[in-house]
Amino acid sequence: MQGAQTSIKVKNYKKKLKRHTDQVMAIFSPLGRDGGTLISGSADHEIRNWDLVKKKIQTKINVQRPDESFLLKYKDSHEALVNFSEEHVLNTAKALQKQAHMKNVCCFSFCEESIYTGYEDGLLCSWDAKTGEILFPMIGHTNKINCIAASAGSDFIYSASNDCTVRQWNIKTGACEAVFKFADPVSVVRVKQEMNLMFTASWDKMVRIVDLEANRVTKSFVASKEAIKTMIVTDKHIFVAGCDPIIRGFSLETGECKMYQGHEGWIYCLEVVEGKLYSGGDDRTIKIWNIETTQLLEELNAHENGVTCLAFANNELFSGSYDHFIICWDMKEIRERIDERALMREEDIRSRKIEVFNRIIEAKRGKKKKGKGAKKGKK
Image (tube, rainbow, N blue to C red):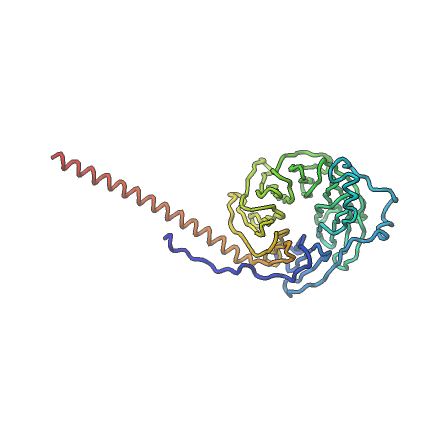
């Protein structure tokens, strides 16, 4: 039985979309996992709207940072923005002066009819997803934007920055309505509207849960051995990863921690779909995990550089990378591969049990034969 193993011939990937001219930073499926549309944002300052059914780019939007003359009419005064963390090494006057010329896009978020972009100098902008026109800037952060959290149906978005703050913005007016101050740069922010909770992850390896109604931290814990770069929150779990190559999953109910080990290098992105955890990282691989058992189910290899983002659309998996490409993976083939391996494992376990059982029977038979021979000798 052990030798009777069949295998499915699977192409390494289904197809590559026309490459960006710089790293792919974010991909998003506005119509859900079944929808035939994918949106990508790149460090080349271009957002592409892909029609996956017709296999073409529908629209392109250039999101270059607006110049100072445009921003001037949105500023309350000519005074410098308030720096809430002047003593932090990244936010001293000298450090900010050194990076004053850095104004590239570094963060994207997509929600309903709007696109949100974050820049290295702390500026955020809201864009009309249909026309590509800038709606308004959001001015307040004093350092690089690391993450933007937007939720369908909400009047607010949240931005996390190297200036050690998270800001809450009104998406209708662009006004900052709340500032949450921390001791270290905040790398990730996630919001669960139905729980009225905000989750933050920082350079200090901590995850903090903030009650948005009470406006206070209700829980905080060390979630990693190194700085956290990505986090995803589901109804049951918080998953974190980053500079430590181990993914950690925490139960929201019990706090129990499970570890998913297998990556070699930094981990940049996480997604949860159909009870499985997907991760992409610096080792150029996408890994698929069983959430409950932490077992590595599958590994996908095709990118030539680190995997930065993941999304599901058109019943397929898409991955973006530092190699400028978006790769499409056939989910049907991936499921077949995982199911086949599960059957092979079951068959292997069954054959091992039969082998052990046969050895025990043979051992018992051997003892009986020795016993009979001893009795004949006595006569």
